[in-house]
Image (tube, rainbow, N blue to C red):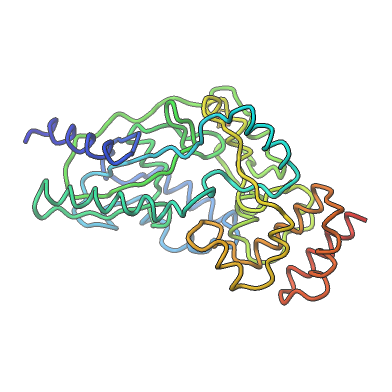
Length: 341
Ligand code: SF4
């Protein structure tokens, strides 16, 4: 099979699995991105995400992850819902004072959904070329996935640090397959944001401190998911209604306009009523929200209740401030009560 035929076959099979964008990058190290990551970590911008500090070099060097790697196959799948109907829009506005969750988190855990497709894809690679080796990455592995996707021509990196694909914007799940298969690479996507800075100006916590520079410690996605302790006093009043993740810097992006359907919400009263870890697991097992844990989700819901002016939730907040087993929930419930009063 010629190199061109190999590439066509690989691309077609990935598309048949539901990956709407497919591109190939060489497995050469990403030198510029490696230097940027090291600097970012040295400045302490990773917050509690100390896993990022372990061997940052490996993230930009696929051959350190898989000796003999030749190519990185970058795959993207859209998760934006279609534009809502007028009835759905009406229901959304009635949920405006509820807890917001990032769109990617609305449904089953995407690691599992994409993981199954990658299993099929790698079985196909094995059938295609005996002895082929590969490693797959879906967000959790030590690889600079967005940078390799940019090199593979899937999209460009926006000032909000997201990968912005052609047509689907940044509402995409990314996956990468590092492999010893030598597939001809695509040209990198060399588009850019130009003069736009909508995401920088829209971020309520000013987490995008400069174009392409995100201070994770201020990012609502980090504060509501990764951070373990209480939310910084300065930022509590600025997380709006977000209780898991945040989409603001994507919602304002003009490249997302065509597929910017409304996001998902959860009733704050329901979250605040989850009384123990077993009930939390029963409600959220198999979804991305499990990552925040009951403690994190209730902490976030307390702040959202205050930020949204939900006086009707005062009785629930009072109970939590007195008797929740976690100090962080008691403290943030007390803060919310103070704000509401
Ligand atoms: Fe780039 Fe503007 Fe989109 Fe931000 S909002 S990522 S500056 S195009």
